[in-house]
Length: 401
Image 1: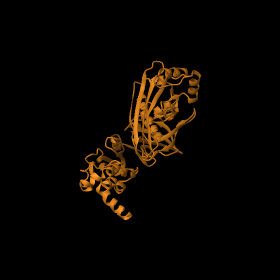
Image 2: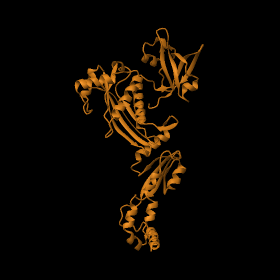
Image 3: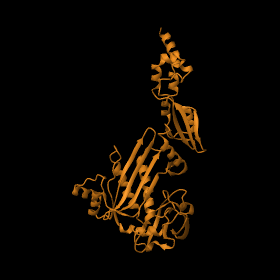
Image 4: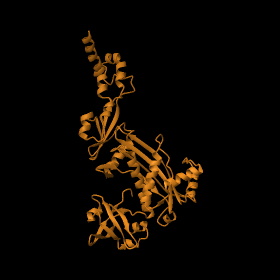
């Protein structure tokens, strides 16, 4: 009896198309994960039904798959399906269903998996995959896509010195994710300090907020401007985290944020920036937020003369006293112009383009002596032990500009 039931089921299920829908279910996409090679994708989900795109770098494969619960529908209509031919004529027997096979796209860049899902749902991620394949940054051995960033405003080299002190207000959190605004505000503060802009300490700002019993809602800048005046800032930075989406299973995330710099006295918008990044290589959105802010403030720095449009890949620290002042090379980025030109960790840079760092009165002035535009040569006067060297370095374009 039992064997008879098993035999009947084994005959009916294929006839009803149940077996087909299980094999063709979109649930097979759950086997995909990043990182995964082209060969691994083929091994997990088989060959595509159609190749949508193949430009030598990006591959877009299309799979025609049924919904996850399609097999339940087939079971319900099993008697009718068998009567009309079942699996033999499938899916023509599917006359009553609005759940027929749907296209699912799998995107690979340089034979590595980047994104997958319904075509409309992954359209933005496809654009990011293109970006990842064409414009990327290496971090700790990983290739990461560049964020899409904008940044501009009327502030420039002539007006930046009017804003000696700035303050970063708490950014608005992403919906449903508390704490993201304070994280981004901290990132902005630290990177502004790297540009040698004097920033109001967080503790002082918190004290003023408590004293004035002000809770900024970010919907109106008037309160923020009033706080800026109370703490002695000439400009404030406000902003919001628009997206902070983390998909741990896929090791993927998306981050979007925006900021505005405003003159405290006049309310004039000095600079505004916005950036977005979907990163298929990691599930760490904070690192992407830092990269977005870095790129936005690089534009701000170049526009105001706090940074040059070029960079040479060196991290150095201004040291010395009234009798001697120089940059000590702390770190060289592998493969960048400074390393290629022969600069070494521990070298002392005593002059840039003939301008002695001894003449610089401030750290900002010293940085301006050593600024360089993309494609230009920066002449470094270097002291290495008992040697005096002249090292010319041709700058590369700064990322984000």
